[in-house]
Structure formats: structure tokens, C-alpha cells
Length: 624
Image (cartoon, rainbow, N blue to C red; front, top):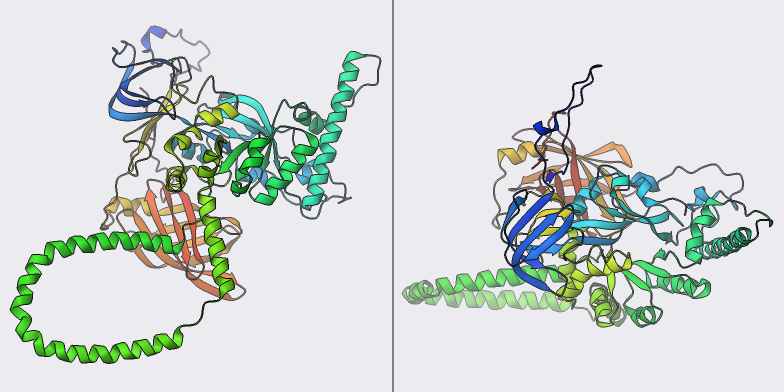
């Protein structure tokens, strides 16, 4: 990744008698960029066609069919590439460490009345204060076309306020566009403390909301009549007052349909503005959500593709190859067949008899194995298939219902967004609606649509350049502009379809320690993959939950840019089963699957945390 920064690194003299700096010595670094000869998608619905873009002082200065680059501009040859408005994540934890949401269980005297912080009631927190600009999640966001996000804190019941963050800057203060844009709520209790149940959570929220409304009234009275009793300070309640006044919306995590029903019931009872987030089962409530004017952030985490769907795809590919080979060989095969026909006559008769005998045996075995289908099992399979199709087709259902939506990335990963959109579009979502959900819709929801979301003169220069139309399977994002600051990306090399041998450079890069995360049904699992050796590599896998029990890899196979191996994993007391890890690498990161027979596969991803040589670094940052 190469980044063009818009400032100079000046050497500071530390001597007591510092010399006077002559600024004429230092060349001026430009903040003007000229991108020529590119296809410009100005909005989800509108394409400008082939043209040029001039960026100056962090904003779009001009879009034209043809113009001359200013003398001070850094010229980027577009070569008919494609430019889109940069993406905006409707909801994310980008930049916030996972450790922020983890706390040791404290000692509390009265578990029925614990302090707010113990049970995750911290609405006074602001997300931007927790953001680390160097966090790896921000790099992943940027490399997939995202320039901004509504970021919310991690936690349980009321983690804090959402902030609109721009993915450019050396500090969280540099990055924040809006400090407080929402309050974030999760219907999660804290085990062992009140509230721990969903009923308790709902009751606690009602109580907090009503207390905040009362405090607001008291403050208003105190402001009007100075002689009245002073309203006492309460940081948590004061942070909720904007919600009671409908100045801030309440963003509520609602994965399942039952969560949606609860969130809608509380909204109706208390009367605040509601945003339902990370929605995974909302297709049956589209009419109600539309009628009640509820803002929707759909989840980007889709269910895994069913095994039969994958097999069908593989079958189609194999069938195509087989047909092609059959056509090529047809002529040659006919000649050979005629030449051997007489000689094969007697052999065919013998084969026919043997085949009849074998078919009889197979039929007998099949008759024995065939069992009547259980209607209940078949009905359950049909319901499961329908739910799967409705889940993947949820975005299309919302588009059809006329409900504008954006996307939430609390569970889905930004690096999977193009694949996820592809599946959604196969289920009926249009390209225009998909782009709107990542640009104009989140901009409108966050109240920043006058600044971002489309490519127009005067708006912030938030855009990305793709080497092909974005939705093409093989397209790559080459560069991203965030408020006029350019970041370039190394385009991933295309892998050979027939598989290739691993190069010595790839083997050398493999060696080291890689931090991984596996998405298991019980939640994310972290650990390390340690690779050693030169020609013959060894692999050891450890888990952060049990670092003293390393698992040694076996059946190690190297591809052109991939590695696969098998380890034994514990699935129960004293019960271990083999798990196959298939990892594909792109520089210092990887993604892939962990597969266990009869249990399916789970996504795994990771980044390199250390190399054998501690001082071995690759710095791809450059200045223009």
C-alpha cells in the first residue's frame, strides 16, 4: 500500500542556537490531483462517461469531458479505468480494538444494583475517543473502497455514542467528522448482574429513558427559573437526553426478527427515532418498517452457501470442460472406433454379460438401502431452504418494498463486500441499489449527503479508482482518495487456474508468525499460525484460549500462493477430529477456510505479526 501524504517531514534542529529555516529550499508538495481518461460513476444511477477529474484542497474542483491539467497538479493517467464515489459503512467498529469490549468480571457488593460501567451502560462514551488510526481494520476498510464509517463502541447494553469517522489522519481528532451522531444499544445483559435477561434489559432501558426525560425537564426548569433547585449532574442520563428530544437516533442491534419486534415495541412506547442495525431477518417486516419510517442497516454477513449449491457450480464447470473436450476429440475418436470395431466385438459381448451381473447386484443393494422419506424431515429441509433464500434475498426484498437501506459491518467483513453484493444481486438486488446502500443512503442517514455520497463539484474528494467496472469479478481497486489524500494499493496477482508451484519468495514470506481469527458458531476464535523451515516447512497452530496446547500441522501442501494442512482439533472432552485449513495469501494477509468433516467449514483470516528477522519491514509509503 502506497500513501501520498500532503505534508512535508521537516528536520528540526535541536541545537541551542538553531539556524533560520529557508523555506525556499523545500519544494512545495502539491494538494492538486488530475485524473484523466476515466469512466466516472457520479452516483448510483448516473454515469458521466469518459472524462477527467480535478481534485484541489481535498475537494472535487471540476469534472469535465476534457480539460488541461494545472501546472501544479500531480497527473494520474486513468487509462480508461473506472471511478466511483468512495463507500461509507453505515455501522462499524473500525479502528476500535476488540479488547475495548472485554473486561474482567469485577467484584460488586450488590449484584442486583451494580454500577453502570459493570453492566455496559456507558452512553457518555464517544466512539471517536476509542479509535486508533493505526488499527488494521481501517486499512482493510480503505483497501476495499471505504473512506468513511459510522463507528460505534464495543460493549454490551449501551456502549456509547456513534461517531462519523473519515479514514485519513494521524490521530482520532484528525479523523472525526461528527463526534456524536447516534446512541448505540445492544439488547445484551451481563451475566450474574441486573439486567441479565432480555426482559430485564428492556425494563432497564425504559427506566434510563424515563430518568433522562425527567432530568431534561428539570434542567429546562432550572434554566428558566434560577431560584429553583439545581438539577444534579449525571453523565449517563445527560448523554441520553438528545435521544429523548429526538435530536439523536437510537441505533439498536437487531439480528433476529424477535429483536426487531422488541425494538419496534420500545420505539412505539417511548417515542424516539429508531435505526435498526445488523438486520438479518427483516424481510417479513418490510411493510411495518416502512409505515413506521424506521431507518434500516442490513447485515453484510450472509449464511454460508449450501453444499449442493457449491457442488452444482463445480458440476457446471466440469460439464463445460467435458463438452469442450468431447467436441475436440469427436473426429479422432470416430476414426479410431471404426478401426477397432471388429476386434472389440467379442470383448463387448463378454463385458455386457459382466455388466448385467454387476447391475443386478447394485440394484439389489440400492433396493435394500432405499428408505421412505420422512415427511417431517423433508418439510424441515424445505423450510430451511426457503429461509436461506429469503435471507440472501433480503436486500432485494427491501428494494422492492421501496425502503432505502445502508449496510452494517459489525459482523460482516469489508473484504467480503463484493462477493456478498454478488450473491445479493443474484437474488434480485439491482446494481443501483447496491451502490446506493454504500454511498448515497448512508450519507443521507448520517446527515452528510451535502458533502459526500456522489461525485460533484465542491464535494469532498472521496472516491476510488478501479481497473475494471467494480462489480466485475476480476476488478481491483487501484487507489482511494479520502478528502483528497491518495492511497495506492498493490493489485493482487491473478492465480493460475491449474495451480502452480510455490516460488522461493512466497515460501520465504510464509515463514514467521501469523495472527488468525476463525468465525465459529460460538463466536470468533483467535490464535497464531507459526510456520518454520526453508525447503520443508513445518506448521504449528496455537489458540489464545489454550496457548499451551499447540497443534502440529501435517499433509502440508503448497500452491502458487496458498498452503493447506491438517491439524487435530478438540470438539469435546477427549474427542479430537481432523480439521483441514486452506489458506490463500496476499502479501502479509491471508483468508480461507477451516473444514471439519460432517461439521462444515468456517471462515478464517489473518495477518502476519512477526518474521524470523525482527527488523525485516516493507515500507510501501511514498510521497509525491
